[in-house]
Length: 110
Length: 115
Image (cartoon, rainbow over all chains, first blue to last red; front, side):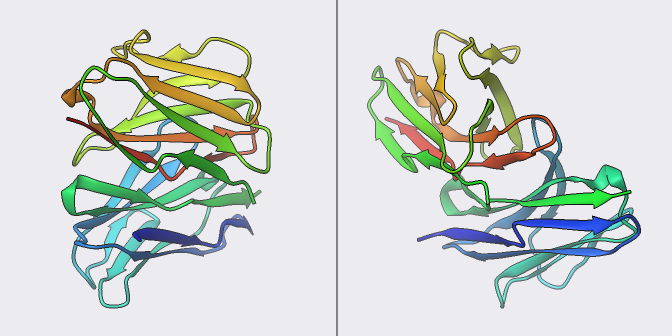
């Protein structure tokens, strides 16, 4: 059965801390892994990862994929209160099937 | 932690029939639930927002008579795709929240195929 597991489910940190969010997966015919940030309604796209070992960066956020160990991490450095959100990991598999993880709820305290 | 159960995970139906998708919050009361749709290689598209006991608010371009949303209790919202057509084939996912400041939890999604 295809599945995507995110950890931790929730996390509380202080401003300035660095956090690492984890996403492991078991799917058939892996195509890509995506990270989203959800604050209010629709999640906003962060990264798409298709190749192992290539780090993607956007400001204080970065992500990397390990297709051998079947996981990805999302790092956020120097966290700010505006980073408080639910971070979703999703894996696209064969047949345009998308499997979502349950998300990690991050709360950054001022 | 907050858990949202979505059922069924996948369904195949004939053109012209209706399909109901359920979204349940298992350990919290969901005052607000969102329904999304995702086409291949695209991001999630918000379809509608439903609040318990009131009519759903549909996003522009979403036919409310085709995608019926019912949020009759604080733990259950349903999306019914009426008179389904092959172009309705998609991935539908719900998310539920307990209110402002509590965040939202996603269901596992439903893959609908209309043949």
